[in-house]
Image 1: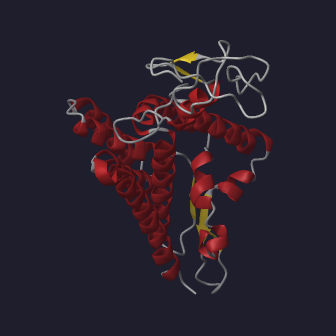
Image 2: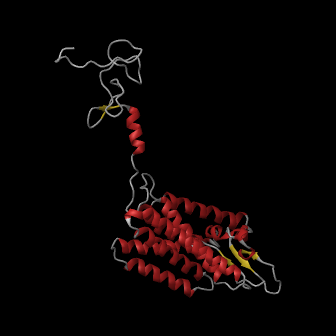
Image 3: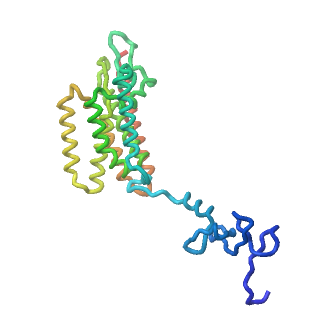
Length: 302
């Protein structure tokens, strides 16, 4: 080969002399190779890149490896409906309401936060007081409502508070906040109900108050004037304690405290250890709620 003679492409093994053949179309010769993997590509397979061309396989692989965009608090940024989880939760609440209100009313007792440990009959317990096999009620009671006004006010509040938090936290973190706050509210309600007294409470109010507490933290973290959310919180608390005979204030307070703590853990977590801090905060609140249930169970008569 003369010094000035250009380098000729190495023939592909088994194909004889000549130009290499496209790795996707073996019947086509080409003098162009993928800038990423080096395999020959024909004009149909060439994908323009910043330098040269890439093959479709490398382009698709790079797209799959590319990190999904994240929100300011570490959640995966939703590329579609930013309120999907909120809508699903509203849908589930409405379905359970139709079931328990009109189709099978006895399911209100089966799914609600029910507990009773009558003193005159040692060892006889119902609902939450019966033990861990009944603790599913901590979750199911969040989706049961008593009457149209109850479901309407809670779902309206969820629609107002949910989408904003879901967009900034991401779907998974938002769902964890909602469920754990609701569980914590129900756990406090169980703890503060004396054993011989019958407990029956339903509704998503504890979870809603958790979203309200997290919203207050969000306003604080973003340096947004907090007067509107504080006013909303005060009004809700006044209504809660003014109608304490009809409203379970214990679930509201428990959900509010849990939501505030989880919101703080999610929104003030250091970037370097964000996932760890957020996960540990949520797990710690859930563990504290279960600890309240254990304490309440241990205090029951009999």
